[in-house]
Image (cartoon, rainbow, N blue to C red):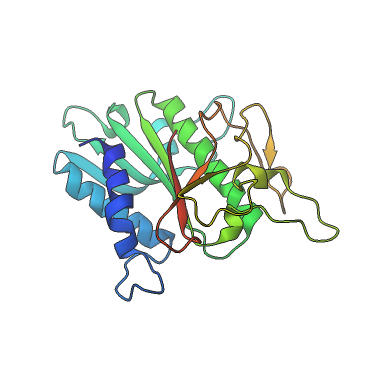
Length: 228
């Protein structure tokens, strides 16, 4: 079974049953770490004994440094490879990497910047290992991550919002909504608060805008899942 289909299967059939919601008293997923654990176990069960599923595997230690830029991050949330006793892990071609986010403490612009760093990191893994398949999965339970808001008096709308928030305001009944703009590849995106020398530039243009899908009938729960 293709790993992308396995993850989609988890999102469609398992996530709502495991997710902490007002109606679920027997939940397993309540933060990012628990999401990482549950998805990793699910992938391991579906792929079988010919594959290895690991957590927090260090990409820099596996494949070395970049000549022109630093790794945006180093540890892959979920790292999967097909076992091959004749090769070291760093030389195996059939590999998969997944970055996860499940923010639950607001900090909208900072978290959105972290979403972009995840995309960049998965692009870097693919640049180092051309046969790698890389993915990002982000789950939120807060309308402010994907709904357009009017800036408060004296505030300017931050550029980063349009890469994740819809330009529409009435989105509660829609199964899928998309961000106002695609994340550009030819633009330096700076950390919106705090340290101003933290810059991220995507290696390649994304093929689509961020699209948020329903998880349940509660419109605050949504996710996007992309192969990078």
